Length: 245
Ligand code: PEP
Image 1 (tube, rainbow, N blue to C red):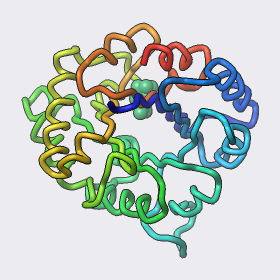
Image 2 (image 1 turned 180 degrees about the vertical axis):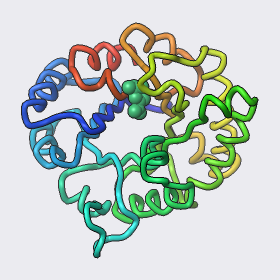
Image 3 (image 1 turned 90 degrees about the vertical axis):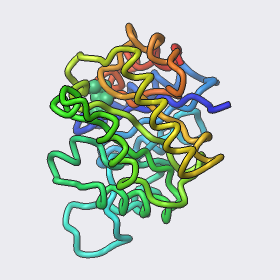
């Protein structure tokens, strides 16, 4: 009942020449049975949004400021992302949490801003290797869910991405049992808090998803798609991941 979502996070990668990858991706999936989202760097967002307009690929920002506008040099508001053609925004990515010291309260404010602007918010959660090895994974995820998710989320305006920090860009992937445990835990927490809407929210897995492991991960209950970094940069890599969903 939940439609799959294959989301690509280009991070700080890509110039105008990279738009050729989007053309190839669109050509390869003219009528996909899943949703496709690419979150390019802000410098490409408007051009990419124009390039995919009317087609199956949606675009999103990688972060937003909590305010609508103001004296925040270098920041971009959710309303500005919408104006540039985005329909989604990632908030709370572990690289933002680490590099920019974003705490759960900041992530929650950004998710509220996304709701205010009418964007779908992709809220990222995940434990560090030290937290996993200390047996604290579910405690950490539970605290992030409680602290990062605003009230009022629905299946239509929110997506949750479980991304173990130690699996991002490392080639290391949790076992299928570990992915299943966390996704089941997130689903239960979402249903407890958001009732029926919690059952409608998609939960993505992220962390070293590749064409070679995607099908196995997508077969896990409560995995509704993936948030993909490195393997979303080239259509030749992302296309088989989309096809596996
Ligand atoms: C990410 O940055 O969200 C991510 C999952 O990266 P990668 O797929 O490269 O591990």
